[in-house]
Structures are given as structure tokens and as C-alpha cells.
Amino acid sequence: MNTVRRGWSIAALAVAVLALAGSVTTVAYGVGHGAPAPGRSVAAGGGPVRGYRSGMMGAGGMMGGAGGMTGGFGPAGGRFGLPGDGRAVTTMAAAHARAQAFADRLGGNLHAGEVMRFADGYYSELLTAPGAGATEVLIDPATGTAGIEYGPAMMWNTRYGMHATGDVTPQVTQEQALAGAQAWLDAQPSGQTADDATAFPGYYTLHTVHGGKIVGMLSVNAVTGAIWYHTWHGAFVAMTGA
Image (cartoon, rainbow, N blue to C red; front, side, top):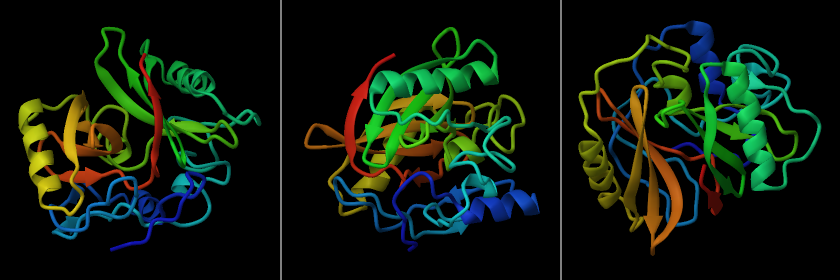
């Protein structure tokens, strides 16, 4: 099990290695042991893993970018990231604005929807004009850097991720994703339940709940059913809708 370093200005060395190698076609974060206790963010999993384990962190910024957590292939910018504007993000409205700025860069008439505040930064989903899930982004509260969330959004999203192939036919329904996520959570010592599955191209993302309150997130691959717990957010703080 890998130790997760806190803070979204630190990114995944393993992602950079895979990007350079260009050799990954499937990432399966297998069912196993070690889900986080409520309110904690630790590496989950323990079953068969192909690709890399979420939680492998290193310095330098996402994908080796010098400019921030979601820098794409190099400094923050391009298809995967929006450079920070030098202003700290201290409100949900400001985080929404940064997510929308990145959505505008991606094009396709996307808009920022739900925004969540975690101890380690902000999260926002990006939606299509009709309201379907497009992708997920992280916003660095210190710099305003925004970009594609690492993990499933980067590796599994078939439209906006690193291995974009276009739309795929889900082999796992939304109901099956919820059931699979719950079965995985039930096998962990967390007491969490799966809730509110949102479909994105190639996968689903769900809230995990404990005591009636959101404590984390996980994703389910829409083709393989693989589970990937989001280990990088820290404790949940607040959420706002679209």
C-alpha cells in the first residue's frame, strides 16, 4: 500500500512514467482491502493491479509539469490543464469560476457543475450542455491551477483523458456500478456506503457516505467494473450544486 502525500500541488510519478512509456491501455484498481476509514484519505486496493496504484506521489507537478498539479505534458496548460492566475481560491464561487475557465478552454459548450471542497483542494465536475457528465477537474486553492483530475478522469475517460478513443458502450450499468461499489466498500473496514453515481465517458464516479455525510469518492470502470478509490482529496468540507 502506498502512502499518499497531502496536497494537490504534488502529483503522481507513476502517471508520468506511464505517459512517457505510452504503454498503458488498461488500469484496473482491483477489489481488495484497505479502504480509508471515514474522513481519511489513504491508498485503497490490494487486489490485482494493472497499470499503477493511485497514491504514488512525487514532486514536480502532474505529468512532470513545472507549473502545477494538472499541467498536462509539461508545464501547466494545454489540453489537460489551465495555469493558475496567481490568486488564491478561497470560495466555492471562485473554484467554480476556475473550473468554468478550464471548461471554456476545452470547448464543446461544457459547463462547471457540482463543486466540492476537500481539505486538500477543490473538485468540480464538467457537464455537457444537456447536463451529462463530461469529465472531472481539480482546482488548486493556492494558485488557481485547474485541470483534469488525476486517476480515473485522466486514465479511464474515453473522451477527455490521456487515452481518449471516443465513446464506448458501457458493459456496466449505473445500477451495477452502485452495487459493485457497495460490495467493495462492504469488504473494507470503513462503514461507508456508495451513493449518487454520475456517468462520465468510460466510467462512473460516486460519493461515499458515512453517517449520512459525504466522506469521499470512488469511480467504477464502465467496461471492466474495476474500482478506483480517490485517495487524493482529504477530508470532505462542503459541496454546492451546479
